[in-house]
Amino acid sequence: MKKMKNLSKVLGIALLIVVVALAFLTYWHPGARTLKTDKVPQNDRRQTVRLVALGDSLTQGVGDQTKTGGYTSRIQKMVHQKDKVKVIMHNYGRAGDRSDQIEKRLVDSPKMQQQVKKAQVITLTVGGNDLLQTLTKNVMINQQSKLDRQLDQAEDTYRGKLESLLNTVRKYNGHASIFIYSIYNPIYVYFANVTQITNAVTDWNKVTTKATRRYQNLYYVDIDRPLSVGQYRSISQQAKLKRAAQESNSGELSVETFQKQILASDVNDELNDYLSPADHFHPNAKGYRLMTQKLYTQMQAHQQWLKK
Image (cartoon, rainbow, N blue to C red; front, side, top):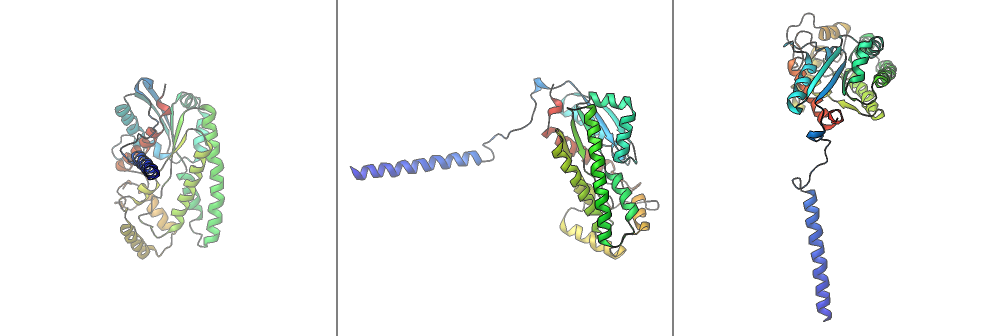
């Protein structure tokens, strides 16, 4: 009898282990779970979504050789087709604007303020011109420690300007979902061996990502790596770029070479498949399609804007 009890106990423990194991495998099997999503039920969706685009030349659509408006017209069409809602778009992008200038235009324009107040979605491209201004002023500094100090000071200044801009936007609209793009390095494929610009872009983007943690309904749209490296995505491709760049510039970035690649006054081709050959700085149609897809992915992950 005692042996039977012990056997029953052993069998019971074994059965328990099997049940727990099956439960574990069932839970962790990728096809057995339904991931929690932010999807809005069809009957809870808006029929019309208002989208306001604020920013610089990337919002204006500079570089789009198809003349179809960059990412703004594309995201309008994509949301309309995929989410079955009407999208009213207001584009307030202006080439060359820094963060403070974007804010000033909003503060000075009652029309912009009214559209921002009514928006469910606000997109923002900002920071590229702030960094460009800093790099242009300091490009001749060869001493790394001095350059780092200048970039750190400029980064602190930009942090304050970005917070001021976001506070102003939130003053006019406290509920809309805001999707803010990263910046990227437009001359990486030519200066892949020059780390100062890549590091500065990374640090600038960290300012933006930190801001997303301080504001509700503020989401980061990362286009840095895909637009910076373009089609040169593998380690071997980037190593080849660095070797070629080292041969052409010896690791130095002068005002002349910097302006040549940024302004591209005498260059007729572009090494980066995602950037415009007209100025070697802004996205081309392919680049804007990438920006659109990255934005739409984030909008689908955070669908508060679609809810009635």
